[in-house]
Length: 211
Image (cartoon, rainbow, N blue to C red; front, side, top):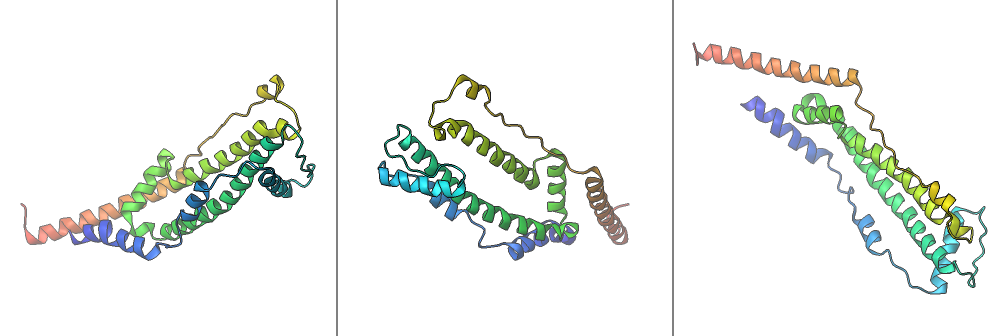
């Protein structure tokens, strides 16, 4: 019973407290998302476009306040600028989580509860690695969607049938866990279980709790 409590409760709880990083939070990102609004003025649109063109200096960085697409461009540029700012916060947040997971991975051999959970996640493709891979796929697709929706806009024209025919599609293939790594971790969990069972068997035999 003491070994069971140690392996499944004490060690996981201790590691969780020891490795926990207080700086891992999404407050900055949530604050940015709540502030996604801009005044519908020419000055605000011009400011957004100026910042947008710093990302794409090869595009014509001329603010045409008389163009019929000016306000549409300005708002799209504002959304793009906000996405760039949020991307930095998300990357920082993700990096902190990856560091925490990397530290936790070192203690998997003495943490059978988390080790087993991670093993199932690797087999099913539902672990944190799959989540990060999915995020990368979504990020790449988001960029394609932005230019599909706004490419014609920044060319000062409306979308055509040909543009719609080239609409991007999201494709994501989740790479399964490597068989060798899965078998190695499974073997360790089984070995640890057998050691605990043998220890319990000899302990109970000495105490003659059963015939």
